[in-house]
Image 1 (cartoon, rainbow, N blue to C red):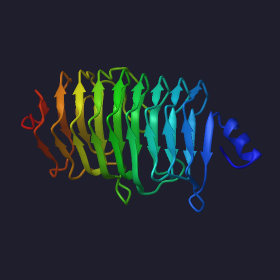
Image 2 (cartoon, rainbow, N blue to C red; image 1 turned 45 degrees about the vertical axis):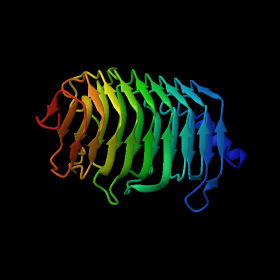
Image 3 (cartoon, rainbow, N blue to C red; image 1 turned 180 degrees about the vertical axis):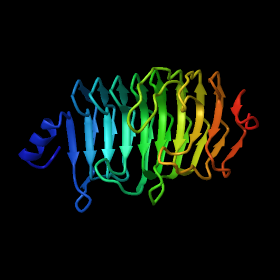
Length: 270
């Protein structure tokens, strides 16, 4: 939904299905995209940038060449009751910016809830953001279900919540990229972020041999920055290999409590 014919042409030329386009200086406010299917675009099914109070509800995004539903430079968004399946990268992708290197942006309480993501490289990716909630989503058949990514830039990614999601058997294989090892058998990964709550999730039957394989995995960023002060509590994490809970980070400030699990790295949190 760009405001000009030139904008609409740019959206199509980039291979996207729908574009919702504002700027940092003049965000596009109050747009709702609802109850439609975006299939087979070479870019993204839905691409939003520079928005305020974007609502995406009841949208199916499938078999797109990059992301299913993607938003950057946006605040107070709600993505709910959507289906994202068989997209080449993330089904749902939220980022501070994709074309510049800068610290994490405050989303001002963006929410990703009650969505179903299947068959993607990653179900939900949250990259270089703060103040966002991922809750009550279902993910199965992806290479990784939920990926929270920071890179050591400041402000640091964090103040995030991943709660009440059901993540099961995300065991598809995806090859390595220049910034990421191969993915397979990954439930939730926190890498290079801080102050994130992971609570009340069901994370089951993930199996793989990637450095990021496991049920809930804490991993320092690939730029070398550690996670800090994550809280992992009251999750049901079972049947995951090589571990249900894996703290492969260098920080010592995380807390684990009340989780139902069998195997942890290192021993103790289970």
